[in-house]
Length: 171
Image 1 (cartoon, rainbow, N blue to C red):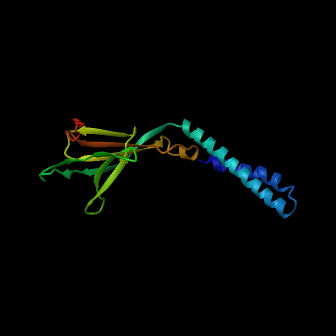
Image 2 (cartoon, rainbow, N blue to C red; image 1 turned 90 degrees about the horizontal axis):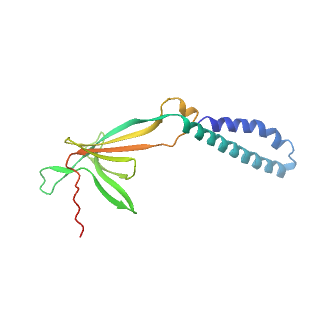
Image 3 (cartoon, rainbow, N blue to C red; image 1 turned 180 degrees about the horizontal axis):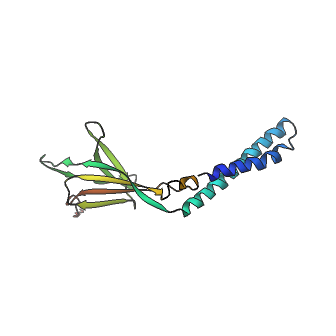
C-alpha cells in the first residue's frame, strides 16, 4: 500500500509552489492551506485507487489462521453431549451459535458467526467439533507494499457425523 504515500509525496512536491506562491495576506494564506489539503486528499485517493487496482491483480491464497475446539452441550438425560452448533435469527440475519473452550482458562465462551457464503458446515466421523478459520493473503509476502486487497475470511465447522438434524416438522 505504498501508492497512496507515493502519490501524496508527489502531490506535495507539485502543489507547494503552485498553491503558496500567490498568497495574499492571512485570509489568502488560509484559503491556500485549505486548497492544499484538498489537493493532498485527492492525491491520496488516487494513490488508494492505484493500490486497490494493483492489489486486485496480484495472486492470492487462503491461509489457515486458527482452529478453535468446540464443546457440546449435554442432552436432557445428562449422559452424552451432541449439540455443537445452533442457528438462529438476529435482526433477520441468520447466525451460527456455538461454545468454544476458553484459551488458558477453565471454562467455555459462547461464540456467534453470521451465516454466509464464507461458512461451511461439514460432518465427519469424529468425536469433537472444530471451527477452522482462514484468511486471504497475497501469495508473495511483500505484495502488500504495492497493493491493497479486501480482508477475506472463510470458516469451516467440522462436527461429528449425525450432529445435523435434517428432519423438519412445521406446524
